Each structure stands twice: as C-alpha cells, then as structure tokens.
Image (tube, rainbow, N blue to C red; front, side, top):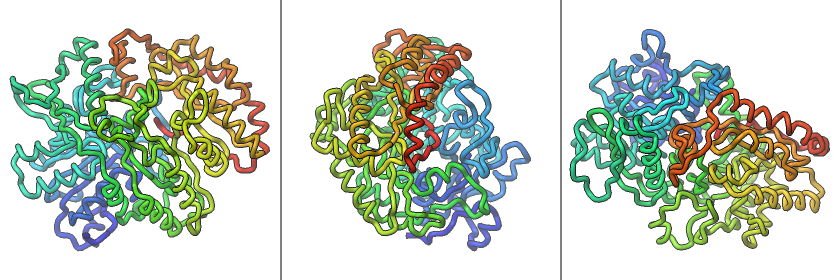
Length: 601
C-alpha cells in the first residue's frame, strides 16, 4: 500500500510532500472532509492505496481569473471532478426555486461556494485551460444526469451531462472499481476501444448509432425526440429504470446531436470483501487542516456515524438511491464495522455516542434473496412494492446481533439509528413478519432511538402512495399500534415522527386535507413535510414533467402551480398544528428527547 498522507490542496502542501508531479487532481463542489461518507475522500483514498499521487481542489473559485484551476498545474494522468455530495441545483434552491441562504457542505455554512450545474461549469473551465488532459466526471450530479433528464429549475429536458460539459468519461454510481480501471487504462495508454469496454462508465461517441445494434444493447429515443414528445421521454425512462434494477442490464445507447451517449453496464454488486477494502483505508475522519477549526455543518451530522452497507431495494419513485447505489445490497462484515466502531474512540470530542449505524435504509443490512438465481434474472424495480417479494430474506437477527456487539465495544455508551428504516420489512397489516420482527422493533425503539423514531409513510391516501411506490397507510397504522404497545409495556415516552410529502404527482389539495385530518395521526407531533422537488432520474420527476406514469403510461395529475404547491404544504401545518400538543406534552416527560435535522431525500 502507498504511504498514507493528507491530500494536498495547495502548491505549498504539494511542496511539503516533496512531489515533483501529481497523478490525479480532483475538484469538488464540497469542502474536503476525509471521511468515508464523502465520495471525494473515498475515491482519493482508494486511488492512493494503489500508489497514485492524488491532490484535491475543494470548492474552486470559478468567478475570478481561474487561479484555483491553474494552481496545481497539469496532472500526469487526468482531472476528476464532482459537484459534491448533492446535486448543485438541489443544494442551491428550495422546492419553490428560492435561493437557499446556507450550504451545509461549506465552512461555516456559507452559501455561494459552488456554481449552478457545477459539473458542467468545472469541466468547461478545465477543458479550456487544459484541452489535452482527460476529464472524468462523477458523483451524484453527474451520475443522475447521465442521460436525458428533466431539469426542474429550467423547466425543460436537458441532454446527458456528457454532452453539455464535454467531459471525456462519466463514472456513475459508487466509483471505486470503475475509477481504478479508468486510471490504469489512462496510465497504460489503452486504446480508445479498450477504454470503452470498462464497466460502469459512460461516454459520448461522435457519429450515428450502428445500424445493427449488437445483442445486449438497448437503443433509446433520441434527446431530440424526447423534447418533441413527452411520451417518448416517459418510455425512455421506463427502460432506463428497468435496466438500472437488473443484475445484468444491457448497454444503453441514447442519440443526441451528431452522436450518442453510451452507458456501459455496471460492475456486479460489491462483495463483502470488496466492501471491507473500501472502508479499510486510512481516513482521518476529519475536515482538511486548511479549514483551521471552521465548522462544516454536514460534517457535524455524520462525524460519529458508521455506514454498514450500500444499496436499497425499496424502490420509492421519488428517490435516487437505487439509481446511484443500486438495488442490490452490498454489506460490510461485522469485523470491519466493529473495527471502525472501536476506532471512533480515537476521534476528538467523541463521548461514546454513535449518531447513526445505518445506510440508505438502516435495516436492509445483510438482506438478499433466498434463491439468488431468481435475483439474477429479476426485473422488478422494488422488492417491497406493490408487495414484499416472497424470495426476500428479511430476518433481522443478524442486524440485532451487530447492534449488540457494537454496544458491547469498549467506550461505546449508545448507538442510535439515524438513517431511515423500512417498517414493511418487519410488519404487515396483520402483524409481524417473522420471529425476529417484534424483538427488532423493541430494540429499535428502546435502545437505538434518541427520543423520537422518525419514519416515512409519506402520505395517507393510497392512490397517492401508489404513485410514490410506497405501501398503504394502513401499515403505518399497524406500526403505531405496535409502537405504542412497546412504549406502554416499557413505561417509556419515545416519540413517533412521521415524514410526509406534499404536491407529489397524484396528490391534490383534497388529499392534503385528508392527510392533515386523518384520525390515525391524532396525538402525533407532525412537523416534517417536504414539498415535492423533482430531481433528475426519478419516476416521480418523469410524472411531474410528462403527466404520465412511465410504469403504465397512464395520465397522472401533477400540481405545477408554485402557489398551489405552497398551499398544499402550508395546509398541512395549518391543519396539523394542534394535533401534536398532547404528544408534545408527553415528550417533555422524557429526558432524552433529541431532535435531528431531517435528511435530504
């Protein structure tokens, strides 16, 4: 393994390392935090492990003479860049398209440290300054804009970010394996043909699509066709989403302009051994020393958290997790997780409390199909909707044993679950799924919830939930019944906080009225509602733009009027404000009530 160093971000820091060249320079829209929750740090540490010299330029100034882009000179191999841990437009604007006044990924939370459409802006600058150096783009923004997509902020379709930016390659999804292959290929001078065989990358090809597409190739409607016909766009997305959730998807070709974008199939889901190797890297888990103690809000939220796995098979229509991380779960070993837990004791200010033992969905750890051969051929987009797959193994015993081992680790006082959970993994409308289900709910509520358990039924009306890809609200009613029973039997006052979404496709003002007055929510303190924001590469965004459900091509009502969207959200607060008074009074009796900032969906 190469020597572990803190990545240089300035000429002075490069000189201090005694370097006379840099292999790879990474640009990011976020402040640099050397923690496995941040993609830039993961890729930097992974490439460092294989002997490459990596430097990082966080949040470069794109509005001056571009000195930040020039300061480290020309890398030996390539530039890599991302917009940060969020799409830059989601980072900048609210659902009502108002400019946000803060940025959690910037020192002291200051806004304005990255441009709109950061991937495109950064790439064009680098291509102008260093036209002969390859540029590889990745991260959330690039990954979810890899094909024709609806952009809510411009209210129009946009082509692949490869086409708009001029980047040489796009690495989508979780990037350790494709980025290492790209790096080796560029270093060894592989031919263009060989480079374009690397899995999990995308690139733009000049010229027409081959007339006879080979077997295993999916040809989509062109960007121009989609702009003319919303139905063509919806059809495209139906096939994109279907293949994104397959174990062995086809190569995807999408014509645009005088050429086409090619999306190569991804690497197989990472094995446990591979997952462990991604975390067995010398992360300091601290912000870069350049920030000299400045507070970075996003770091404060995750600095004492532990990630257990990747992927999500829930298939919510408004969520991009599966589109980026994949549907199939890749889990770390218990040994790897416990090693990280033990090392938390070495961090400054760690008082023994782990804020989150989780992932996109905390209770999917270690879960997979009972018969993996069936999973190998499966084309379902969700293992839970419209009902739980009978082939899904959802026993929570292994997860509870992991919790027990974590809590038994020296120096650990409490471990909490801050990530979301899927209660349809352990509950049905009739009761518990299996023998592990009730004990899991009990330990979740009594041992791993910091005051309030946050869950996401998202709505009360089943026809809206069907458009969301979520289970019936009757399942939440069952959860509340079992949750209250756990509290009652234990003599505790843990709170239950449901999350909801307003103005989602299919949701009317009347639906929000029914939600706010639903009797099953009586006595619950409800203050968590999001106005639906259409983000690239989700089924819900396609519905919002096209007015069609891409799953069956049937029309869907969408509330597009900004004022009415706001009324849907405000109606919730107006009608639910009194409901939580009783719950709030009971919450005051509990000494460990802790509120957490809601996570971005």
